[in-house]
Length: 254
Image (cartoon, rainbow, N blue to C red):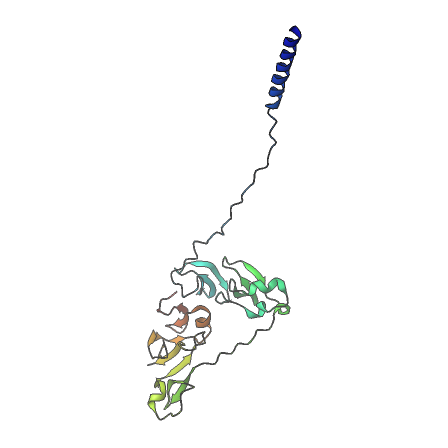
């Protein structure tokens, strides 16, 4: 009987000991935490305000004989220091360059300026990011857009005709705009169906459309016939023949 009790006691001891060992906690290994990187949003320059979606956020402006860039509120963002400053727009010579490293500077994120007879591309902060080199310049692909309308002179006055439909100059009904202006020039643009037309009437310049609607009043001494409309949807005007500035299609000055 004593042997049985001893055996039973030993059996219980082994069972309890085994149970204690089975619940022993193992040390927890350090598991590396997964770090989720937050996407960093590019900072937006508060000075690049957009009050009018139809015009650029930065507009060339001349001050004390030199060009810089103002925002749509008229504040100089890029200080005037250049002899030439054009709108932020594509440069096809750089876009078609054989030098892959400079192609990006041909995009509309940059503008061409000139100082001391040296031409640069600048970014919207005014930083010079590229100096032009003849070896970098590729050939622009010519994209000719045939204009639907053209100026027509009769009896010393200018009018507008639609080239495809005009046959008989003696029939006034065939004129899009019957000759009545001192001068007309169709501005180059992307919309050949409704181009902007620089016109002169009573010795003043304004802008009309092909329906003879006045877009810019006849109040200017001159309006330049350049690429300002094509590149920036703006007109370069002057009231004194010397100081030029830009106006949008609503005649708002910048």
